[in-house]
Image (tube, rainbow over all chains, first blue to last red; front, side, top):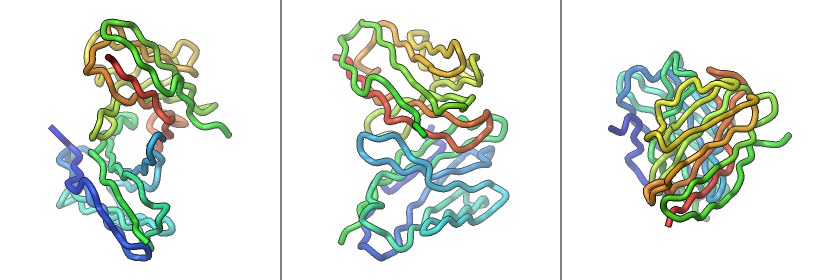
Length: 113
Length: 114
């Protein structure tokens, strides 16, 4: 049972445009959400997070939106840059589980020139 | 400062053999996590340490898998009687404290069981 789902395995966006990566979850006990970015042969790198008490968190070019009623979150990257090309993982944790993360399957973003 | 390091970076072994994978967390991080990433999947939680003790080992697939962290720093993931299905990238992460949501990952060990 996949509790965190990223239904788009890949996404291609032109440089300078907005990239929108989506994530859905089924476990209503999740209360903290994170996005990680992964380059080939490297470990995932933390990008941005959001607590369930918020609906938006912004850090530079990256913004995460959380819609609790829809159990949906999205990552917006604007403007997209070629260096953003990577696999993006959505992850979630439940309160009281000491940060045990449940990951989605990832979305490969390619930013083209 | 140094990030999380993992050794070896690649390990090829034969079915039935024993392997050990090592993780050096970021200095001062008390929490350490092991995940496994199979091809086309996201990382899956295996086990988490707070200090020297395994606080949650609910993700270990069976009793062939075992992990230790005897001095509260370096951790070793041990796999006995390896099977081809154990082939994956094994990722280690650490965080400053338990409940600290941001986990910092190492580059992983790619295990191939022939």
